[in-house]
Image 1 (tube, rainbow, N blue to C red):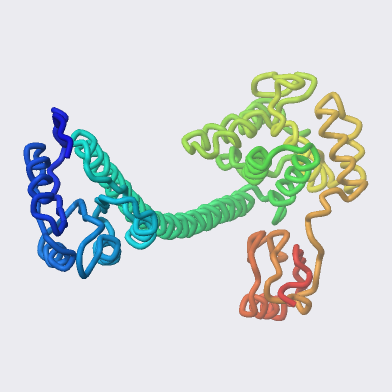
Image 2: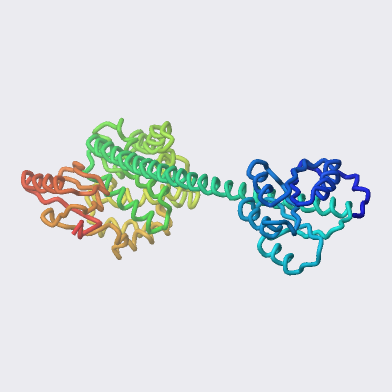
Length: 442
């Protein structure tokens, strides 16, 4: 047997070797070779004894002779592969038996075979490389198992997170819908409160019941015709409902005198009511847009109005709209001239004042509404007996004496429909009922 100096480098890890051979001198040589290199060496003189050692010890690598009695190396290594597949298997053979080597490779799946006599240095390098490969394979398997476990944990975590996100999304959606519904209700209640307050102002101003709502509805239609956005349209609508709020402190005589009959101090007092209206609303932040419209409602397009003498486009568009809408109905109820004009006469005066008192663009929109019935989205008029649950009011439901019974956008149910029909029966008059959904729930 040839000997050589063993490599100076020792393994980077501690390992246990099992050497199996029926020749004691071969086992002694292997032990002398591997122990100085830092390996723990176990010996067995037969395959059966080798299996007993493996049952008791944790072995990293097995070196087995091929030719042994009762159980040869191929048979022994085949059992090692079956029972301890992670143990590296090397075959030591002293003769050229190709068939035996093939059996060992096929049945025992050996890592390498070594012929006798061996070079000590080659043997040490071979064992070291085999153990390093085993370590790499174990590290690979461990990392794969770790990756698989972490992937499963991440999958579980993702599923949990997805469930939590979905639950939170549903919660936020429900909260958003509840908040939106509450805000919509607040807005409806706000406008309804303004309408009630407007009715109270009418009682003091001796206007015809429903006058402010007629002005507000025409102003809204003009805003829609001029393609104003929803916020501007609502500011104009509210300003129109409250356009007489500055007259609350007027004496009855002043309230009942047509505008063309006012002179001196009375006329001066009348011209201040827009400024007074703006002052009353200014503390309410949500009504400041409407307050600015009210202040400029008596301004004229030609610059001869009050209180600031604004002209043309310097006048807020909402004020230009309100001026026309209010004058159209004031002319019909005798608030501007000594007699009540017919709608056709009021319309003619407004058209004649285009470019003077009124904005020509607003006048053109007014003419389209009056002549062409613009604002087709106002709904259809129905009888109380035609009402169905689910119908939505397109206009406020007003009694003959100007009392607001239900506000626009109210969704009718069977109970409310019965109350409307009972009201008509008791009052002896038919209500003007306008709805957006003629079919209701049917």
